[in-house]
Amino acid sequence: MTQLLLPGITLPTRPAETRDARLALATYPDIPVTDLCRHAKVLGRAAEFLVDSVLTRLAERVYPADEYERHDRVWILPGGTPIRIQVKTRHSQAANGAYVFDLKQRSARGSTGKGPYLPEDFDLLAMVVLTENIVAFTADWQTRHVIGPGEIPALRRHPRATLDEALMRLGHANAIPGRADEPDWLDLAA
Image 1: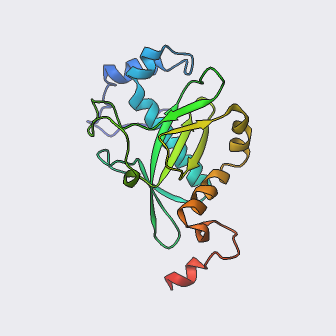
Image 2 (image 1 turned 120 degrees about the vertical axis):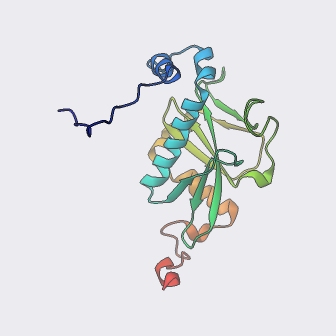
Image 3 (image 1 turned 60 degrees about the vertical axis):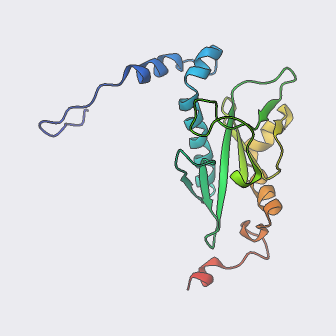
């Protein structure tokens, strides 16, 4: 059954760029590197949505950041503390089967230029392996991170584990659900 449109309203046609992405990504992840590069924005958005999905499934509040920010998401902890999240994506493995994340800013075409991130740019890194539909979180400040092939099953089974480790590292252990020292946030709001 088709939804009827109001009189005088027509759906816009898809721009050629969107049609091209749909065709090019139809066989993802088995696509040429040129298509990965050409449609990096689409795939980056998919990774951000996967982060949103994981956090939402864990009943966490997460919001997109503006495009010009040096982070992609803002996670609001119970009690109102904001945590800035940078999302990075990988689509292919290194020769040893690992997924390597080198932290750099956007390319020269991006609004912030290129180069290394600074520690004050974000609080958490969300490493997304889009081909595996997994996310690993870290608060460890390094310019290079690796997810080994042996870590993938645990990331699928326990999506909150790396998130809680990162919270501990940031000094927010009281925001981890079920901890004995977790405050009753509802009482704080009263």
